[in-house]
Image 1 (tube, rainbow, N blue to C red):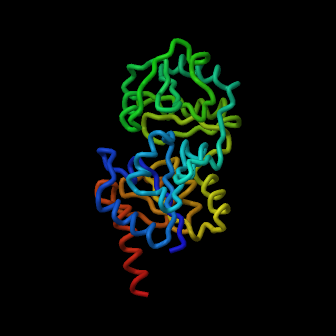
Image 2 (image 1 turned 120 degrees about the vertical axis):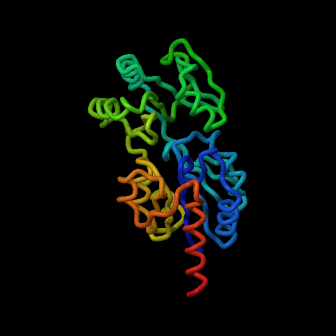
Length: 272
């Protein structure tokens, strides 16, 4: 099977306990054994993605990690960084201003840790649990956070996230890619970074076309890759706008939607 299978993590590959079910592991191992290449595509940092790649034995089959929505692309077998972009540090003071105005919390990832001035924030704690990363409290975000910075996040009450996402996009949208991937996250990325753009480069690297791409996602940061893919698959729990961008809608992440779609595809292939 000459496919690149790109799968978002939270709300797509993993269930509400942040686990990949045995059924989904089994199907993805089969797809890889039969020649498909697997790409995990997430806003998560590399540290928060590698354990899942190990569970799926991706290093044995030429798997790829697409981290930070495409800001860091890593070969699972060699750990070689295939592409990397970092945030323009001249924008950091403006981000701190938005933190102060909005009452939200600014954070970033580095290595195995999350860095923020507000280590007790409940949304920072949620990100820590999702990625199994420690939290480091800093006194001054601008000066104390280690470099380079691939991505920042502004986290806070879902009721105010859309308003502040809009304000930040109006102010810095030409210099930074700004979007929200969960109700309480605003992702702050280098300009031009998104999953679709990154996957187009990966396809080209392997001599493949979008027709070879099967992509699964549930949130707004998945729309670009779903539109690019020959088979763009939205989860049953996806936002309505995400479903509209997809070619197919499968079951939810609690119902093994990724596995169900691939099992049906395998069955159709065998009947031909």
